[in-house]
Amino acid sequence: PLVQAAGWVEPDPFPLHASTLAAGVVREVLVQESDRVEAGQPVALLVDEDARLAVARARATRDQAAATLATREVELGIAKERFEAGLEVTEAARIASSELQQDQAIAAKQRAAVVEGQARLELAQEELVVQRDLEARGASGLRQVEIAEAAVLEAEGRLAALEAEVLRAEREVDKARARDERTRRDLELRFEDRLRLDSAGPAVALARAQLEAAEAALAEAELALERMVVRAPAAGVVLERLTMPGMVLDASGPSHVVCSLYDPASLRVRVDVPQAEVEQLFVGQRAEILT
Image (tube, rainbow, N blue to C red; front, side, top):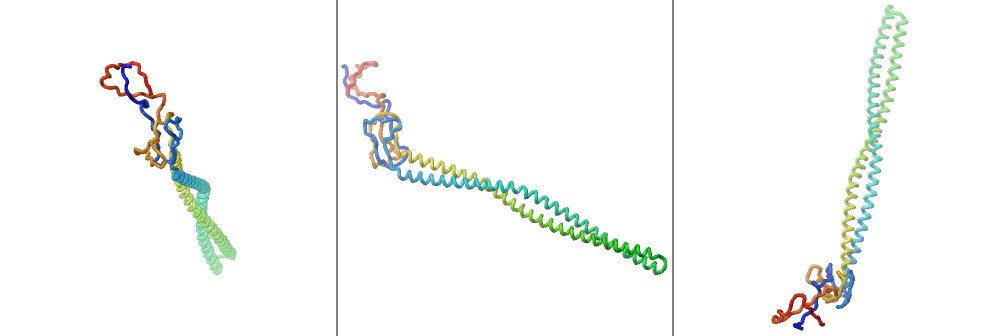
């Protein structure tokens, strides 16, 4: 040999670190130095009681949010049904208002007819007075008086009939007014149904958003629980254990590595050659490594 020198074997290009992704206290280290591990194999366990409780709380919150969403969706369905049923109320209110106006017009017409009937009766009575006076003077006959009396009786009967029609028309107006008031109250309830429907939609959206937030919180809690198990990032051999039970690991701090790994198929040898012997070396030179 031209040169002999001491050196060491190291991973090429560098060791891999099995690091924690969550802060916690080490409960157990599952590997020893020189153990072979596979990718994803657990190498350490962290204390996970707090993480399990967090998962339970997040799951309960998610279930509560799901129940609230179901309730809000049922309320929205009922509000829609009531609102759709309220369309009949609107139509009934319009019909009742129209019927009231029609009955009021009929009653007004009947009252005008009564006024006209009263005027006709007064004319007939005046004509009867005139005919009786003429008969008394001998200027008219009994026939004219009888005709005037019959006209008075006819006018009285027509007036009575018209007054009866007015009473009947006013009763119809009262009935129509009652129907109109009832449908107006129903229509006011329809406004309440619209308000209930308008508020039910945003309530469902809010409940759905709360459920999504609760599901995200549950996923975070489950992920934190899963990270209580530290796993190997790749297959290899444990080079060095860097932690022990009871140590506190910080995912973002310097104490986050559980152990280092190397790939046996990817190694290199580093040798310190004395300065005086460097000139005897060249690229491609055969070297023998003894350990």
